[in-house]
Image 1 (cartoon, rainbow, N blue to C red):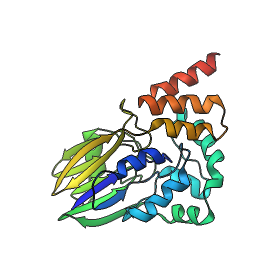
Image 2: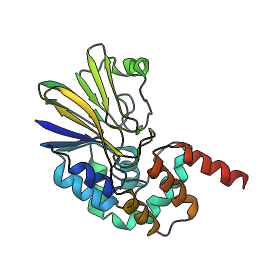
Image 3: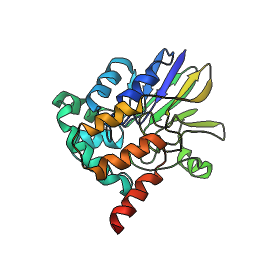
Length: 243
């Protein structure tokens, strides 16, 4: 059984299509199907058709009910601007689907107890916790699972903590670890591998351009997609503040 684990697609259909070419038997989605990217409806259609499980991310919740996504401050304006521009791509049924996604899911996979959620057990939608073994040891206290699958930070990692494994596949649609290729994980025969694949980033940037957003929104998002480096967004904000 070869399971494709994906997270943080963020409306980036070209990236999702590239990842979908990877041989797999099943798909698990760890949230944030929408947000930031120009093709939220098409990404939702793919997840509904192919994923056996999806959990709710902070941007999914925001798109469903209008609540703040509570992303990092430097990304807040960008997220809100794209959400407004792409709102017509989501039907009432799409919003119902996003609203009804579970915040977590427990199941057996390849003989192991698995817990899937977007962020952390104590805060399934919003807390940012990266490759921090001490932080995850606290989060895992009392968690009855062999494997924890999480997303949210856009940073891929695998941690082994007291016999438990934490896997973050990174982001399909908006990597933030300095590698702009779409990130994902493969679970097979009890092993996990973090993998990357290049995609047609120009198609995504063209899609953003078609939304008639201001340059203050499209330029930093395009730079982030090309570089995988979130510092370009912070630099853009500083330039605007001093310009």
